Length: 243
Image (cartoon, rainbow, N blue to C red; front, side, top):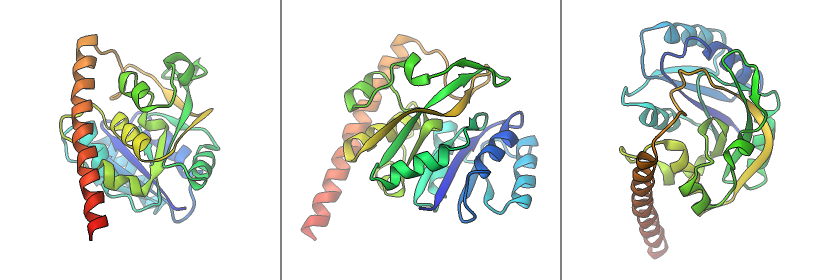
């Protein structure tokens, strides 16, 4: 099973080299890392292009410049692997992450979500389990109401791309969208062990506080978009059967 890592970046120069090193140390020669940069021309591009010269598995591309969700969609669309791992620019993969997640996918999971150790900016552990502090658990309705799907802890089979792409332009985040669709279409495996150091440093593009009214509006919009996508997928499935 060939691995593609889809990494969406924006001013990632502070931590991206350490993150790339933690990823590349676990990949096979035919695997790849697609780095989509939404702010090209700066230090992040310099770092990634230099890394790409040293390691052919790294590919730098300019992002669409339309925000993190569109940037992840762009990176995912360029992935050629059988398994697609999502990655932020500022975390660190634990040494056995790729092996453990790949094994779960090979055992039949459509999508895998694993736990993470939350750290501060200097990688000092703050919380040993993101699942524990967040109350993460499987199930469609559970995760529509209280999202467990954190992109940096997710990987999925390539065939899921046909169902989740393109992302609706107005959904709040890509990871919940991907996770909820996967929950309806196949087996989602939760790995209870932390496989990532999730760095919180005050400048994260994802994460952070959001008001209750905004969360409610996002959930209603997401539910509406999901209904539309499931209807489309059902129509496409019927069409294939009729043909």
